[in-house]
Image (cartoon, rainbow, N blue to C red; front, side, top):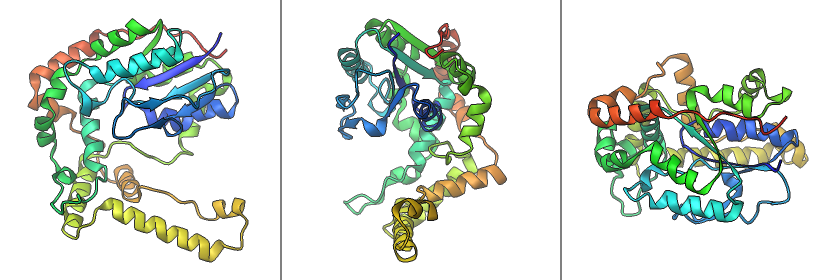
Length: 317
């Protein structure tokens, strides 16, 4: 059977984990090729403009981009964003491609989207005015994107995908490991392998605790008065590392130089992850969403509970 597995969403549902561990392991074992969002050319300003021309159609592969089915900031009542993407996917991959959708409990999803929104280093605007996005509260975030939340519906997105594709895997985030074992039914992909592999990958793009998030917002607010932000600090550290590599390790060959000093990014977030592991409580704003929008919380939760996961059949024996 030809395998064309397209992981199209949802964001904040272990997509970075899958891309940096599971899918890379599959490619390493040469069972399937893997194309991540980084290897798909796109116009960043317009998420509907994706280019899949670099994918080799003569091989079995996985394509992973968690924003293909859903972009919270482009969500409206007509779902034009999703319709455009889904039709383009069908046009390129055909109706027989296997579509992977991973759903996360809605209040956790929205809290996690805010968490990333608040900690993303947006930068100081060219106008010279302070960027309120650097320290927007969860309540303000909910107010700003209230209409987006009202329009949000898992069922509607799944229905749009079902109209274009025959093979759809719908998985709930809390059952991710079990279903991944079922999809990739192979001795190399048991739960122990997942757990051992994740420890080798830096923690990136994961939610911060409320305490760490408050520290991040405070740091961005303080740096904004100096016309700086955390992104500027990260870039300064990156440049320092490059200079260090050049001055100290310029006599090493390229292979050894890469091992001599591993360059990491998102230094502030990594420091926050360390504090989370050691000192802070791993809580988020999911309960706050329930109190801020009780009607929508109830609707989304009932819809989520009513969605049944797909019967999983293995792609790899």
